[in-house]
Image (cartoon, rainbow, N blue to C red; front, side, top):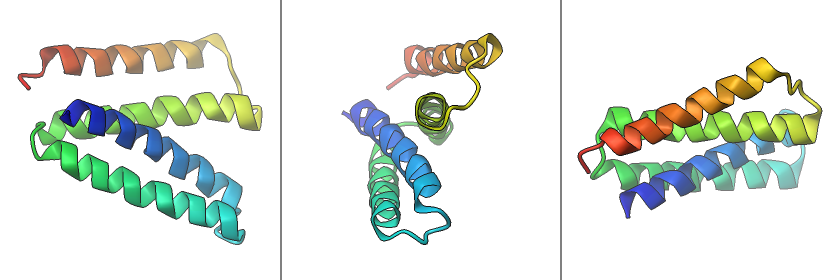
Length: 106
């Protein structure tokens, strides 16, 4: 169950990062509320998963999911570059996350 918490926490990390962009310096109420809600949920679920998972594995997976999600949404929502090297980097991060899961003793 801790891996489920961790994956969902990573998704909410993506949510607060994108919400931060939409909040325009926390000057817009609804995007700021969305960002803060995602931040709290992300942290609570990360903490829950780290009760069982090693901190290095959990934190690396959490940030990796956030990096991948934020980069993909940046491409889709904010017209950021989608060149092949960026896509390759996302694939390498995904491979690292999968590797950490496969090699985890939990």
